[in-house]
Image 1 (cartoon, rainbow, N blue to C red):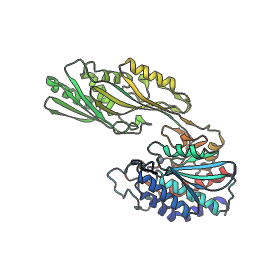
Image 2: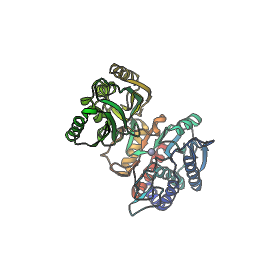
Image 3: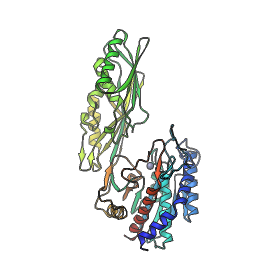
Image 4: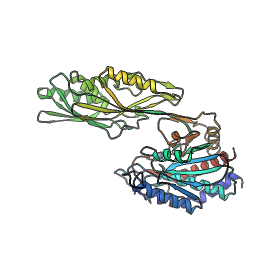
Length: 464
Ligand SMILES: [Zn+2]
């Protein structure tokens, strides 16, 4: 048997062991909760780390639990260090599952549960990949670590802590996105903007509310107006607006108040064009019935219906993609309305500060104040770097897929926190694993195929 056949046989032989270990991790509800003494992300993430460490130990690895931020394994020796980074925390289970969200359910094709795909499954797959290399007697000439973090979904403090204590890598990848290689991740700009809700006309805007997260296209927006004698007119205009834009929504009258609800479609902030922003539509409508409300006018001028920052002077692109602009939430406090901005900017823009300044000035000119702006640098590893080339070659070699090419994305993974690190796997193009949704799953055969790829990636990085 050649190496490829040996790896294939080993990986396929471990199918049931891998599923058992994945379910063991999935059984822990590891959503971040309040920090406790010695548990920076609360009980669940800490318990998931304990389970992950137990699985790693059972497979024969020496391990370190770094203060309940991450668990990592120790293998190999050498001047250079290779890292594989996954995470064992999860997003909330959510409601409506037809399978047990804490694992155990499977059918002929899939296993189910929160984290089987994102990202407990790939953690276990990486551990088995390294175990298989050792079983095959392939000497490690570099140090190899599998790092499993406990805070990927809400801030990535875990790997920031790890990096401070343990430093970086010469080569690293995170199987927390999709094959083939993702060599660039857009930079991020997050901020709030606010303006007055007090206008000049007889119809008053009492409140606006919508959205649960800045990084999701706002799916529904509720507004309360004090409309008095204009109520009927506004109701008719709103219904006409909904019909004209093929939107769902409703109007209810309660006393002098008119309650408007407008429904859009949620989507990830990195792909806002896949959704329909309910706030943007609500503001566009309100602009036709309210007189001189600073927030509404400012919104329509600076944001409008654009997905790429066209209205505030930051519609920039590079050869890998275009800036995206999303408003995820809206809320009211006293006489002020506040919304969130989530921008993902192109991977080759190293300094976003001038664009951030353009936003502040443009919004200010239209009566809106930007607050709490934070810039996150993009990730860009050159497509012709050894890391990207080796991982791409392995992917093509194992899958035969030359159609899907290395790419960049708007989302962010652990890779952003390290030099010489990219996202690599563990989903395949076209997979529908319901990540962050109900009935999260992973196809058993794809799990095995991805594990094979990880084995060969580690072998080639080790011998590079
Ligand atoms: Zn993830």
